[in-house]
Length: 114
Image (cartoon, rainbow, N blue to C red; front, side, top):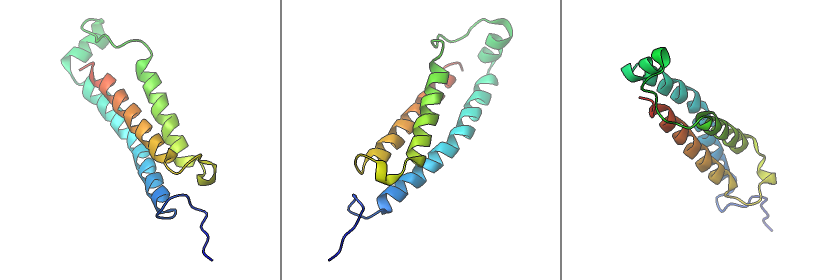
């Protein structure tokens, strides 16, 4: 009699793959964030916004930090949540998708200043 504790057809392999992708996406959040900030600060419009307060984009206050916090929290939960506590097998993949969407939104809002 063969019993498995895994809820995915491929064993724990799918969960391990999604967890590895979550680690990669979470690690890449730092260089992507700072790269987009440096890219924006190197433009003439952003330097005028920082120096003189003119020509700034109309991004609502708090959206960039909110999206950044959502990306960090969803990424950490996708990486650190134990497999046995997941309600079903695809929750980690959904968390990875939420992390990537929040990361994309953060970078898009930062690049809106350019």
